[in-house]
Image (cartoon, rainbow, N blue to C red):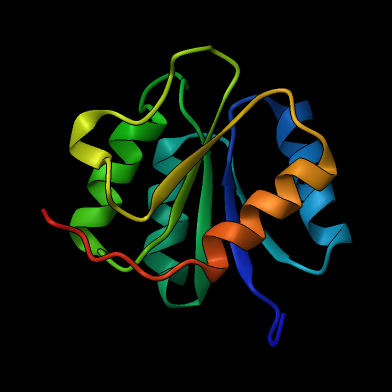
Length: 130
């Protein structure tokens, strides 16, 4: 990691959000937190140039992680996303496949999270088709 990369963690469960943020900060990442999609939109609109990755839960009240990704990719097509889900089969919807998005199944260990984050951050950038 050359510079301190910033990850926006979007998770409606406070204990899960806290744990994920702790895993990331302990591994040298700068972390921004959002409790829901609306907070994530506000934070992203303020900090988007410095955000390297958005790590979001798929199923959240109000705005799902999928809807958040669609909205943010329209405004900021360079963003990279990683979905986290505790529900089997909650993969990427067809309209988001092939973009800057991957997924990680809950529960996961710190090692699994950090490996997947590095994989996403080091992968070639894919341009949004929408």
